[in-house]
Length: 608
Image (cartoon, rainbow, N blue to C red):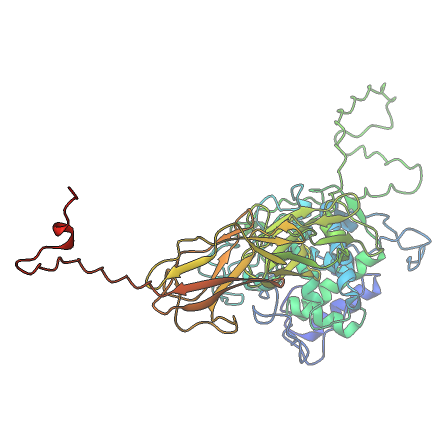
């Protein structure tokens, strides 16, 4: 019977009766609870319930229905004596068996995934023991916890080539990026995702900027989200079964994972990374060590020495066997036993540090008032957020990414549209200084937690026009010119706002009729031939107008100047006709004197 009970389940059983017999035997011997297969399923496969869409590839499974480990846990519960569910006194109880140990980093990854998903999707009721059950049958808990300090496996974990020869036929979907195979896909990592499924569900749970299926934290988080898809409630048996079957469409797989799930729920303990016990049998009948590209060291479970026969408690000598003591001879003096070799103490396993991002339950805006600034100026206030855990306590060391979105030329200090800021001791992160560009209007600043899929916080910022409440001409004579000439006087204005200079304000200049009501259709123009233009005040708030041409029509005109903020001023323009030139005076002539006479002057003679 004991040999029968140690038999492993294998994928693809030829009949439901075989599986049912194994289930019955296991149940009778205190084995973890097994689920009998459906009566209408003789081939080991079961369809997912109608409406389930969690599996986008791999014949509706996360793993592509690739082979998996099938060794079941010891038949004795890991519960301590006296705990609920302890077998009768005549059944030996193993306290803390090797199979119940989970490597520290792997256990931390499962528990962190449960905590994260329960904070964002509490209705799923994901238990970490379910992830542990899947991780056991898929990779032996990441090869017994052979991972580095970041949780990444020391070498990639790859399933067999899914080329249709004994397995599913899945053509390459990742260009070999994850599995090194550019022809067919292979299941990858401790949770054995096929690349096409990882492309949809991959996560960056350890906040290292990468979604790595060979990282136990990333893989466990992705597996949890995958199992919770389609609004499943894993506290319900039907939804739990659907979730497991969506991972690998096999009734034997469902039973094996459920067996481990229930086993871990009864009790488990943490072991150092790299010391976990690995199963040795695969459902395809091939030893995992022989798969190409996969190296899996095997650490056998410790065995318990057989008890001594009843009586003296010492083995009875057999004089017929060489080396056994002869009871007819006096005992020889015992030799001093050799000292056991001194084994250096192992360094204690340091539990992996949980990244701060995983602790964040929500990101909330800190009230800062309206975010408004004139064009080409600095915003007086910027977006600020607080990272809080489920209890509302602030979390230090969380990386928050601020991103400018929308049609705008506003930028953070330094010229970028994104910036990463780490929360301080109060859990606060403030965006870098915002500077408005030349475009007016509204845009959005979005804040998210790097490596954490929680709702973003959005801030609306507005860029307004610069304003002035006064425009004053700087010096200069009245503007007068003759038709056909250029006004000799220059025009320069000073823009101010509440008595201070208003640099950057836009000033509109229009040459209008004498009343200033409408733009003129004749008379003076600017140098470029137009009668309307817009100019920007310089850093000193000064606006200099270009030359003004008088035109050909004499008369009175107005130069009308306005700026945002109700600043208005007018300057008179006078165009005069040219002055007429005076006629030249006629040249005087001397009248001829009649003959025989002389002019009075000539005839006058001085008196004698």
